[in-house]
Image (cartoon, rainbow, N blue to C red):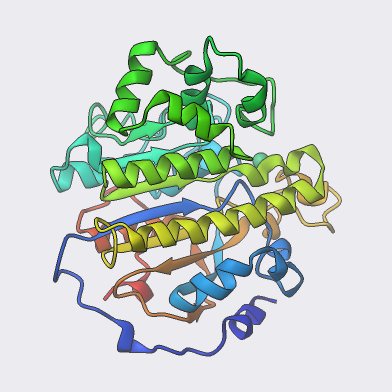
Length: 368
Ligand SMILES: [Zn+2]
């Protein structure tokens, strides 16, 4: 099945010719996009799923090195899994607790080693539960060295406070799909002062933000809007965007799950388009796109198919990753199994810092 991807992506069109010398020119940047909360091969890169990802297949894959087997050996909960992607260690904390990763995050490595200010690493995260993802509680790193974490729903809720347009944006504010009653807000609501400070940082008028949010269909579209604003105003070296609409699959509605995948496909293409149209990012930025993990197989009697990710079966642990940017070979398919933890050491080598506690192995195919 995975070899079918190679056929879909075509033969290697641009061998080593696309390799560029890293280190020459402006300092490299990276954008990491987690492709929704749990997406299966069957609805993405398997032949029967390819209709859901037309833009990944036609626009991004031909420019990317594509890993067809990325194995997640950790806990299959979105926050803990995303935190593990960001630390390069399988974090073991309770997915439904407002906590910080145990191990230093990629943001702390970057900021400490490269002596970068807080504005140089940002996370756009989907729900209140992700509030602690920017900074670990490792004493060697931690306090004050993390990423700026922005929770667009939190921001929107604050911007809508006291207005009459609440109903219009209600669907944008649902915090998570797995346990709708759980709201682990670590900081409570955003104060008026925080709201204005963030708006100022992003050069965003609260009125415009409110008006624009009312035109959007989903939380991921709101995240993209915020991420684009961050790229234009703060231009961080490392931007991490966690898409999450796909996780609406927990509701049991297959059509909404597919809609989430198609929206993620479109947003990934828009993110790459934004990278290549913003002067601060163009031709110096590597984009990494990967799901946090998969979802259960239809065959496993312990699960309920696409709806959840509870069985820990191979399908729910096996995903993919595409990497594209300067010096990354184009239209190359890598079928050897790699690990979710390999992302951080790869980012470290490409951006020039040490991921001292990360357990993964750098992906040599995208290092020059
Ligand atoms: Zn989920």
